[in-house]
Length: 562
Image (cartoon, rainbow, N blue to C red; front, side):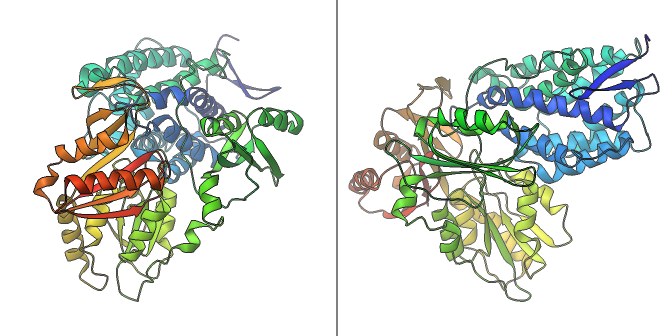
């Protein structure tokens, strides 16, 4: 039949679609294909990072958002496309991670709105859904920026509107959509100068392109498992219960992954592949769920995650430094933190913290809880929501402490009946500065005002290792260089930590300030820290210096200048 499309929802199962339109199960199959194609290429999306710092996690955030959406319908046999779309939207909203994930969830929210009253979707309704997706995404951003994922969804909707005048064939519409998305992504550097300077296209827009391209590849029966590139970037680490084994020489990290396989798992093959990666392998099996445990060298700590992601839907991940665990007696960090109890009628503060040491400091200043998160590990909307939803108070203040977590926190606010305020702290020093103004039994509005004002009381320096070569803001960077960011702007690079520290402190005009506070990460030794602090003390003998173990990954130092 000329008006028939064939969808392969599962191996060996064919779903025929006549001209009456796409139903819930057909769209579920398309969505799965888009998610699969994004999964295959998410590392490439991660690599499209403006700054050469280890926080290129857009692809991972979008993928985890898609997975959360798909998990809502994975066992559903719903035939109504409007209901399936709304279930997907709900899952995406709760599972949204990072700014890209939140905007993607808004795209699916609008898409679902456009299909509210329909049991099936024809091409006209597809266009309507895309228009609503565009409108909802733009409305969800306070200050929309062109040259981003917003531009790409806008160009997708425009292309669909134009093509519907020429054809009512689904594949024709999708072909035009994918072509428009490709052109739109390639044009993003012309709209956003920082992309052009960095020599990359917008990562969120590219991720959206892969999703719709996955739809089309599925219809064309093209493979979805061959990546367009082999660029590798780190996957975010999510907190979960862990196990501890004997450390073998050269095995520096413990990786634990919980996942649901897409198809029956060949345990022998699985174990054999893991044996090529690391040691101390343990595999636990539950109700359609597996837990994989392995010890790996530093340079392979993300390999088991990438491999497992190709086999199923990851639900939890944990990466721990084995030497740190041994030195601390393998105690769980959360057991060592004493958060402030919330008294009836008082205000609670929830802080996002990238390391156990930083979480402990927030607790000492009066925080009632923390969410594990930061660079490369953005918590989901649902995780932020759960952090305060069960607290015995209806007044809550949230400190995101990362610019890529603010939108997810704001989304969590929209999903609770509690009175919640987001203090838009973009880094840890800003969050700690805000905590110094916090009065738990004070007026809520006054607290929010004071804590917002405190964000300007501190400058933030961050020291990390460059993930690629680039030239940004006139600073030439080589992969492996030690680079410094001042209030989020790349300003310094050298071949050692001490030089970069001294340079960035000078650029922060420390001589005009009084206090320097160092939070050192889990990738630098105490001996190195002491040498650098001694040098800084010698250069700034009149300044008050504080040193704390932050425990954050990737960043050797986070420095507060006050």
